[in-house]
Amino acid sequence: MLKKLNKIANDTNNYLINYLKKQSKSELIKPMKYGLLPGGKKIRSKILIDTGKIFNVKYKNLIQVGAAVECIHAYSLIHDDLPCMDDDDLRRGKPSTHKKYGEATAVLAGNSLLTLAFEILSDKNLNLKDKIKVKLINLISECSGHSGIAGGQYLDLSYEKKKISLNKIIQMQIKKTSGLFIYCCVVPAIISGKNEKIKNLKRIGSDVGLLFQIVDDLIDYKGNYKIAGKKTNKDKKRGKATLINILGYDNTLKYANNLKKNITISLNKLGKNAEDFKKTIDFIFNRKKWKKNINI
Image (cartoon, rainbow, N blue to C red; front, side):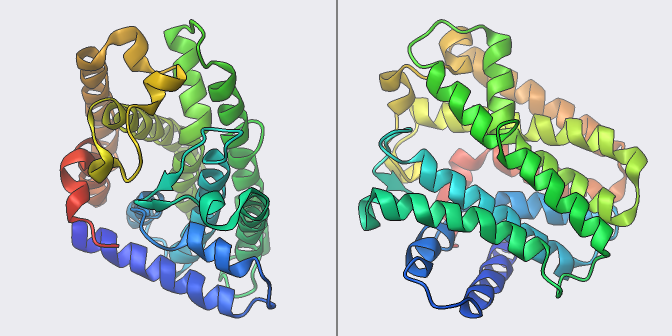
């Protein structure tokens, strides 16, 4: 599992490094690289490759699409760390982009990564039909904007220090975190023309993103800097709306375990080629134990 994860991360990073070398010279390239390349599990790209295996989609195309996904993810993290958002000084064990380069530069670097994703997906070297590229760009736009990451972040901030229902918290976390996981699950089906599979894959992606966020919250609650790569116990201090607030730690862990089981059941129905995907789900659920062994 770790070997495959590292290979996908390295292949994705190498693609991004080479792509950025071809860009016009800009003072923003350095902070963009800082927020994009070092560290990180590239777990979204791994799920993209896992789903691609189910639908027999070319690895090279998926690495390129995954690079666009990682640009969106990095942009969201850079903005998420800003003082006006979650105000995190550390990310992946190092100073956040705004601490390294200043707030204004961090905002502009994040914006540049967002638009770079669209550039990558429309690149002539992505060996897909134009109508498929348009679908992929349209979908990643939905996942990133007011109906996805940005909208979820808005709700996350507006829910702070308020009594929020369990259902509203779940919907907020799906918006904020599940969007890119949904994208990575459905892209291979779109590329291979298996449109009848998209509805089920969207549900799987939604559940995977929710599982990822819940585990992240559990790590914040009981983990430490070495596990999380940033300060922990911040959710409680900021009054964040999490499942732990309503269910408690133990019941939230049980909720996550049941969610993992349901995802596995859904993946079993996709056949033998879903084995790698199931291993990735195990990794997400147990990443508190695994993270110290990741070398990317």
